[in-house]
Image (cartoon, rainbow, N blue to C red):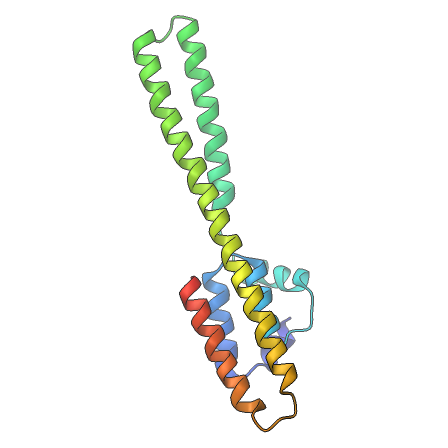
Length: 161
């Protein structure tokens, strides 16, 4: 992967590195690298990204937060049953925690849908642009078409990010 990155033009290398800094999706990084001509595997791309860009896994943070809130609700219910927390106060706290829990679950679901949507759009764009470039391979318009494809790819990335 490192050798391939070194082989890129300065403009493409800069664009790819900037994209990888922003995204946390190894699939999107791989699609972009394939568009730029990378022949390796998604595993190679993912290993490189994990070494090069230390990123926090926010999905995991939200999942841990959901687990903690469920435990808090359970502890609060136990406290009410044992008489350590007044019934009316405990019920109000449980309702508040459940509302927060539902919000966090919705946020996690929304982020999964967004990531899936972005991945599908980029995969479709990658396939369409590759097919178009292969059709016009060795044609006089291949160079301009390749430049136009890069412009389209960049525009799609900006709109989906």
